[in-house]
Image (cartoon, rainbow, N blue to C red; front, side):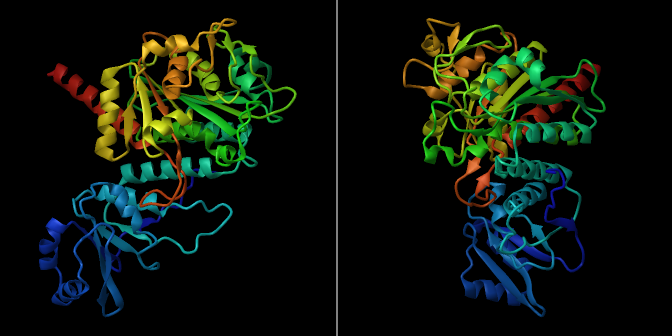
Length: 471
């Protein structure tokens, strides 16, 4: 389940028809390489290489090829407009405008995704022929497809146990050492996770694994990844309205994204060590559910007053962050669909990022710009930390003022991270409200490409530094 993605790609053959991607500045040069009939046809059609402009070229067998306009859009996601616009059937071969076949194929594959479990798409995506192996593009596309499948699967089929199963199956697939904690052991070792899950008939689970690359050593960088896996969020006794609950199957998008990131890094066999934890839980309502004003224990030892039962994701992450940061990682990332305030601040398309280290923040932001996977950093503003004070416990899970909700959520979680650990927090929407090039409507893996790109750049820097020191 979730691992055998049928990407629309295969080896190139002589029958593959070309798709020439072109920008306005390169149109004249492209026309000069085409047969006179194609030149005349494009001229008569008024083709100007505008964004998403597509013209099919006639030939003896019907359609001999296509020309696709990119305009000035630099994003590889624009190629995601092609899979369902090109005629299905025989394979197509991408000829990218900027020479980056990997980025073009990645964008194409991301646009070809559809959630197929319950409904077949109106038509199949046009098949793409690859002139050469593109492992980086294909492993990223496959991981994004996996994340999207997880987020799109309804909560009646993906409960806490099933989400934990995905984590342990991913571990087995890559030779990692899996862990799974539930029942009395979970109540003892992850009391905040347990408190969030008490209201559901489906018990909470913490799952994860440890992995190291084939060339990694005990001294290799340790990357810790923690994900919020709330498979459905009613809001608890602070219940959400109906329109606020309709997309809450996506509230495990942080856990899905963490598993996707881990998959990319493991399949790339980077010389790093990974520690992965996902808190799999349902926030439901029953006689056993936590109530407003309850005080709960946490793994860190801090007591938390529950100011709002709908601020449950930060409670799940509190225990995971405490465990992961105590392992002394070189970098700790958590991913969560955490606050509506982040969406108010930045909208649905950008990941809201918090970081306690400027160097790592700059590295991730730079990768996001380079890979067209947008993030924006907000501050861990110490002046708001006192807003989380509680008269009855060490901390409240919500602020006592109605401002800066994303900031105060991050400040709450910071209390559970060891002071000397470099930490990044992604507050994400994990969803596309409408279909756009490379982003079909439904679940999405936001920030995955940026973070993996940052880790790959970090590994390259380390390798270069070691080579220099050895000279």
